[in-house]
Image 1 (cartoon, rainbow, N blue to C red):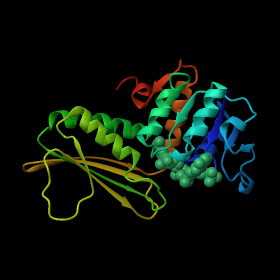
Image 2 (cartoon, protein in one colour):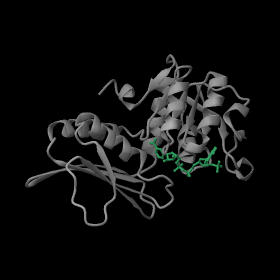
Image 3 (cartoon, protein in one colour):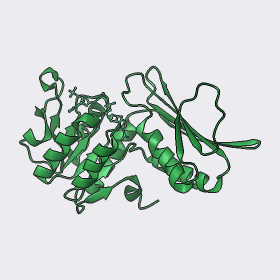
Image 4 (spheres, rainbow, N blue to C red):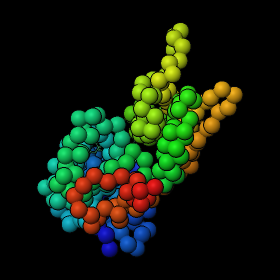
Length: 252
Ligand SMILES: NC(=O)c1ccc[n+]([C@@H]2O[C@H](COP(=O)([O-])OP(=O)(O)OC[C@H]3O[C@@H](n4cnc5c(N)ncnc54)[C@H](OP(=O)(O)O)[C@@H]3O)[C@@H](O)[C@H]2O)c1
């Protein structure tokens, strides 16, 4: 039985993850982390303000919270020598640097999108970017109106994949207005925030007379939670290091 701590247990993703793990025979949630745990009536396990306050033993911590919580998350995990699955988005370069630094001491799995479908989308985008170098690349993403960070971490991940596979596209253009024409080197990124949309990512490669569209639609938050559980199973006995969806998928 793998023992798990959830940071962000009160949130939309934390609640979905908790429910899936409650139904699992191979996993047990032993504690949660939330800033407002007193108001948390529905969760029956102990809930703490920060990871290093957690008293229960656990094998791994899964984080779906907020980028501002990363320092206490890393501090707690390093102190406890606990593997971490970080699913939160919106990190600054400095915060990402701290995560990488911690991965020299403990195993850290990090992904802005833990859905297997998005991992395959990313692999397809890599291939298209490499071959369709003269096509214009644009990313359109849509999420619910409560999402805090824009563009989505997944859109940034997809943009980086395009850049890595066609370095000539080196300008990220967030939205468009005004009179300037499109620059050939740009990757356009457009964010829609509306209603309760779980998550959509559409990647366009548009050439002369043809458009290739690669699209992923998340219909339920379960897909991210399931991927996070698979990541936890994957990382739990690994050596310290930085792991991601590519490692989980065997390098594909
Ligand atoms: N990797 C993926 O596949 C994936 C998929 C979906 C979402 N996400 C990301 O996961 C994160 C959570 O998403 P969500 O939709 O669940 O958001 P949410 O509903 O707003 O929940 C965020 C949770 O984080 C907690 N939190 C916020 N600031 C904190 C802090 N400084 N310290 C400790 N806890 C803090 C909040 O609880 P308290 O107020 O009680 O502290 C809340 O429970 C976001 O970054 C989102 O973009 C990732």
